[in-house]
View 1: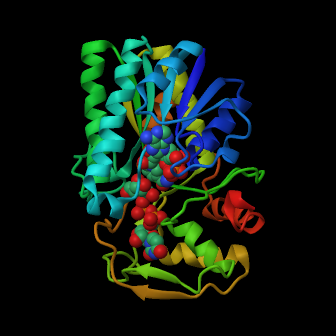
View 2: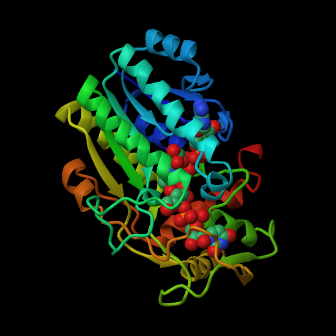
Length: 328
Ligand SMILES: NC(=O)c1ccc[n+]([C@@H]2O[C@H](COP(=O)([O-])OP(=O)(O)OC[C@H]3O[C@@H](n4cnc5c(N)ncnc54)[C@H](O)[C@@H]3O)[C@@H](O)[C@H]2O)c1
Ligand SMILES: O=c1ccn([C@@H]2O[C@H](COP(=O)(O)OP(=O)(O)O[C@H]3O[C@H](CO)[C@H](O)[C@H](O)[C@H]3O)[C@@H](O)[C@H]2O)c(=O)[nH]1
């Protein structure tokens, strides 16, 4: 059986494709390279195209014996989604509808989906369990939640089985340094701090130091990208074995503030890394920490890289050796 990985040239998709390959799974990648990098696919079977291209999907589902789709392809910038919500309804919700319509037509039963902590909005308490209410504060989270709900009804009507994985903050890189995070523009905290360590930026701006947290800065749950990759592999097995849909959080259960992250980056890189306080970024919840007990129980998932130092060391190895990302 073959797995179709959409968005497999992107950050989390390429790390998952690498792991699936190492596990002996047969995969094909589909990515339109709007954000991803062909080099990140490491010579695995790659279709350069769009998930909205119906003829291409017909060809991929006909040419390969696909039983499962792992669906990473999306736009995922929170701020951009507030400024241009239609882009998110188009490339996240409508594009996913087009993808699963083709899956149903070709009798492909399983999908593992990249959902997000942004489906929760401002949580009433942490750690967040899957049964907490979902009230997204931006179109990005809203479209991801709408997709989860579409899967629920597609299961009822057509027997499409889904595992929705609500990731918290993906971080780190392949420990052996072959691939890593290369977003343009970059908006995530850890790569931005490491670019500052490399001298590519003068300083890192801390978005808000007046939150109701210990040091006043936002707290997040950082999860190693290879641990996320492992959860996708286990989700494929779960779908193949149980034929049941489910939703799981994926995080470490530990919270680190923006200041904690900057301090850890200073320690790991040995660089000064200048930081400056700046206004809050609209839409940022103060604290997001996952309870991942459900994923541990049902998927038998056990993150290997709980230590924030290790996560940042792996990210640093990639950025130091590839200061221009895949263009090096
Ligand atoms: N990075 C995080 O911390 C995080 C957290 C929660 C959820 N997510 C979700 O995980 C997924 C992967 O995130 P990432 O950080 O690897 O993003 P990414 O931008 O690196 O990867 C997404 C990939 O999808 C491709 N793509 C986008 N639209 C496409 C389309 N219409 N057709 C074909 N390919 C298309 C892009 O070229 C890119 O390679 C996304 O769905 C994102 O919303 C990410
Ligand atoms: O230059 C920066 C960049 C970020 N931050 C802060 O660092 C924290 C982490 O920010 P990121 O942009 O790295 O990550 P987010 O928590 O905003 O977003 C992540 O989690 C979201 C769910 O809440 C989405 O899923 C999104 O795709 C994913 O990247 C936030 O408090 C942010 O305000 C700064 O202080 N300065």
